[in-house]
Image 1 (tube, rainbow, N blue to C red):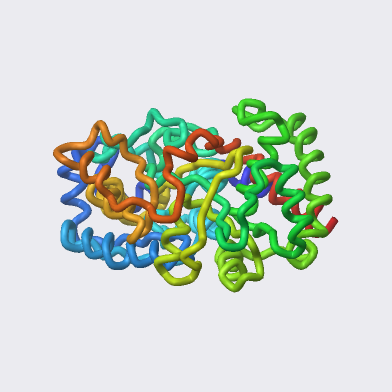
Image 2: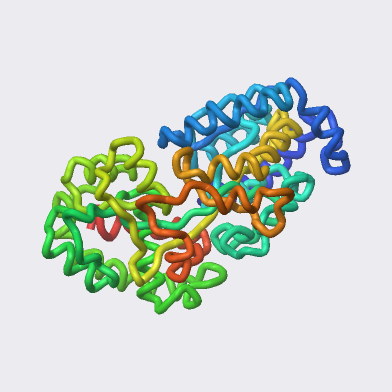
Length: 402
């Protein structure tokens, strides 16, 4: 983080240099028609997490062909997220190079870090015609980890974390921290969480519960509050640790490994940041049909994910055209279908043209996941990004190596 801060000024100058080199059109003052014309026939390189087959299929076999047909744009997708994106842009901008990536799938601390290094193009969201349908007044969408997006990234999807269990094996679902601890003690080696994004999101919900609710940690990062409540969190996790999978001596590397352990019966629960994912995994044949998902009464994080454009992107206009399609009612409708991806929309259904509201309301219902309306009451807003950064650092120190 210190390295990032030190390089901000240098990178800002490099970013300005990159802007002047790459732009063929004054995007800030261009009409949408001019932007679409500029986008024609270009290649857009997108970097995104590529760990889910349904998401990959949606991008490869729906979005890419659609923008090819609409704009003759070749959408090239590469795998990468978080620090990979930040480090790549830092290196390129420091060297004054054109970007290898035009647009990225981001949120949270990645958005925060990219803004710290002035690595994002924008604001651009208001220029997208389909942004008129986005529910930006919704704090779960208009803010990313407590930070107003200010047009620097376009909302793409909205999800809420759930815990996934097998209804034939588990009938008493833990609803509180105390009940979760008792559940782990009664079922040693059958519960855990990963040490990446999903596990950290789970820990944030525990931290909020310990603090007394989301309002206790709302707003900017507070060192004093973090010190007080994280101390209680580490004490709780130390008590839980001996009963975790492999006695807490190791943790799954990611949620995909969690899912595999659950599918094989090694774990009684797994987790997902997508409240509809249990349907996806049952449809894929990975989870048994008796799998279900729920949100404990202490709540889980609901957040949104976004699309950003690199400051040194070669084809910003084409990236804008792709993003405008990806937030269109037709693309969002397709994405929300549980058989396709099941990702929650960021659109305000009351603003949609024609019969799109009816189409959204008629999307095939989830069969195994809870209805969003049922879990919304236990939705917690994301914390400021520094909380996640600190939790990641201190979890390793206090629990993994503690």
